[in-house]
Length: 268
Image (tube, rainbow, N blue to C red; front, side, top):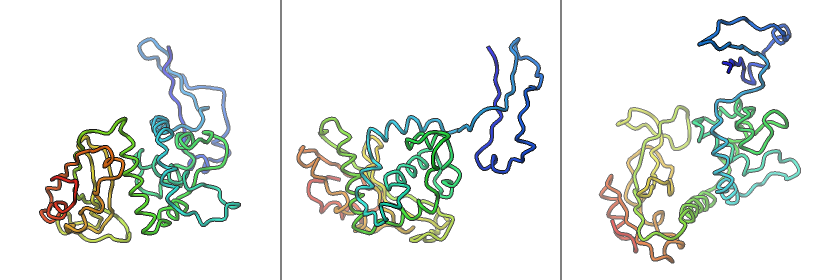
């Protein structure tokens, strides 16, 4: 058994490598053994990634098809003959970035060359064109209008409903707002005195098992009851046809509870 250490560099570092540093050598440093086992130090490894878990997320996304479902809610106005990155691929890349902990779209400029992300988007790890860049992601994120956002929200609810093998007897929906700090000049950002930061305060809906049902992006102020009310928590057709009882929890605002109390087929 050998202990093998690999010395690698990211794509950006390779671009800065000088010709002298790029020269290979057959000699290897002599390292002291550990527990009777030799230690080999090699410099001939290919590009490597610290996000290998994306290969598992790729399998989940392939089965669920969430990126394609959201892309179908958008109208792509680009010339098909000049499109290099399909909307579903851009959305899938963004999903993978967030899943791996890269919330900032600027990270795409480096991650577009990462082998794990390339595999997650059905690309070869070392060959072929790179994934989309940050400006492409920004254009996609600014593409939906109000109607498209509503369709995407409904598709997320439909996606949640179809996750059940059979309709449950009861679903508990927990509606609450949370603070999301921002570090730029994004639209809808406001200063929140309680958190002493600029940010958003989206409304999020989870079920009793902690699964996400839907979200509503909004400025960083306390939501009024009308914002949290029934149109966004109305039981979808999939559940109404299954005679599912829906219980709603919204303990952060009495106004929210008052608004929800007027919604038919909901108890709170």
